[in-house]
Length: 279
Image (cartoon, rainbow, N blue to C red; front, top):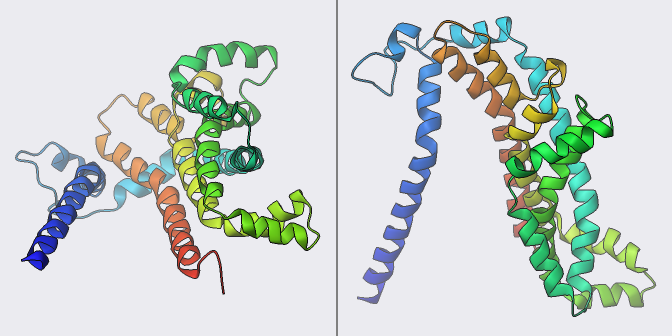
């Protein structure tokens, strides 16, 4: 009886997982389906998930008639530098917040969480005014700084929680062996924190890759457009119905994120199964 109850609970849990997965995957599947069919089938009724004939002409046309390659490269540059800048700033800050014992620590953590709740839509216009005075409009630098500021609170909170799981005894042993605080962080704590860093990297990459409001406000020169703004620009320049082409461009735009996620996911699993403490 007890085993049947456990089996039923697990079945219900996995059923919920499947339903949630379908909720998020179904729009992607429909977009993929639309991208693989000719225009005459896009609005065919009744709609069918699987096209009658799969074609790749839409992808070829998009790659030849748009600046999608440049937009992807721009996004790649912006996202990689955003990840680097966010980790460089958040790791020391989260490590200090994890290790210090101060009565203002709780207030600081709540303040960080409050900043995380602020929408980019709210700060976009004030940022525009500041960046105009600093001559950072229409530059990668301005967009990257804004992205880092947006991602920093959550990543700091995330890494602080991960540092809390690392026993203090490991640091104490390293310091007894003659390591300074910085050496302990660099040689001991960071290697043990690789799964947390990988998680922060995934989060920062996904959030930055899909960011639209900030580049829309800060950029007007198409040479610097990321892929999110590039897709908007591609659709805005069309007079005819191009749903199938937009679908193809959208699928192309998410491929780098999916590949990066799969690579880092394997890295996280490998790091977790290896274990933080040996012996």
